[in-house]
Image (tube, rainbow, N blue to C red):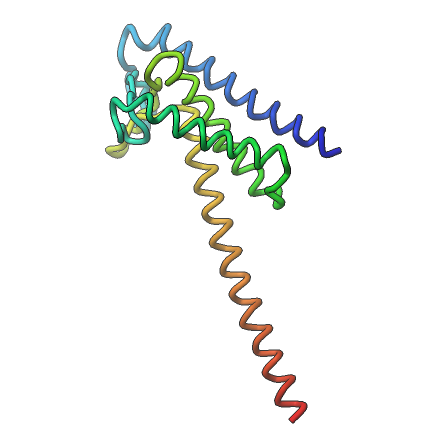
Length: 173
């Protein structure tokens, strides 16, 4: 059962990476020559961008350093996923999503020297991003929300337990 769970996790990650790379191949083939499309419903447009940095083009031009740091983080994530160190299923899915997106962008950095970005919101001023970025962002955001909610729950349980202990001491006295 445990090996099947790891296999499913790896298949999902592999499927997301393959889909991401397929989309990026199409972007390079069809969108790169024209640069960008018109806006869809006033919400977004496809806009080809070579991103040599990280999110929002931070660390632009530091592809080798970003590749090394990303590789180390992804290695840790894969080890945690495959050794079942992440117990709650929800967190497991979040880390798998971040890992899949990270691998998708790492493949770009290692094979092209840049990340292919192409989704541009037109209803607000925001960075151009890609499919892999969506998995990284949603996975990380969901993980943060989960951890914060668990901390609040533990805080409530702790204060309720202290209150019960205090009441039990006063009943004995």
